[in-house]
Image (cartoon, rainbow, N blue to C red; front, side, top):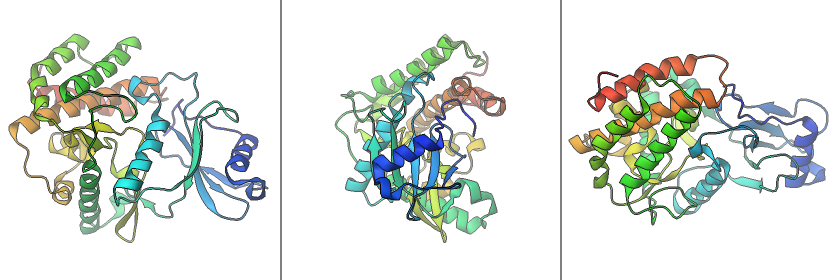
Length: 328
């Protein structure tokens, strides 16, 4: 996926990063030792073959001059924080971080090196899998997601900030950040921004049912899952984690909007019962949040085509309809 947030670096800079992380003796020479991993949407990532033949992955945050959405600020620090939590408090498989640098001495952004996982990306191969194997992988993902959500926090909100005891205040603040981002760039969302605000306010009482902060990934789609021989071997891309309501997780999205796929295998693996009326309302608010981001971020990312916008815009109408709004 092409995006102006991808902070590509020259081979000379990449070699300097490698030397700082692994020492001069492991710096590669010649050509073909760095390959961009192109399916990500935000950070640039390279598969690097070191001088001794070992393979690692390098992720580099967006350049500082590129405006990102409010919730994306400091995303790399969040990912490193989340990886540490998952390694120390769960059995969920995640990459080992070898080295992280936030000095901006070698390039203009944070970066880190991590273990390369020799496996297939589930989001890429899912269409070629037999139905039973695909469902098995989604059940495994549901179980892993439940374990992630078992990690408790002291407050709702960002991992590295004080947070709040009220999920309603935190989540409505998250929505407001996205709406403000859209207004700032005059993004056409098909609805009046204040109409969306009024819809959220009308249903915000459903959020009060959530009283215990849990670690949520939020961005845990099948494209962030690595599999080998029908088993999940690693979960990647943790930069959007926060403490919130587990029901906001990506795996539940299909319970409300069918375009995101059948959620039944994920639900089985997670062990979640059928949603209650209040949970369905919350889940509809979370769909609205996601689709607002998908529409608005297409402008912030500088997409060269309208494919994502055109796909997400009608689904934003669908999310509003779930919340009782059928007109604009």
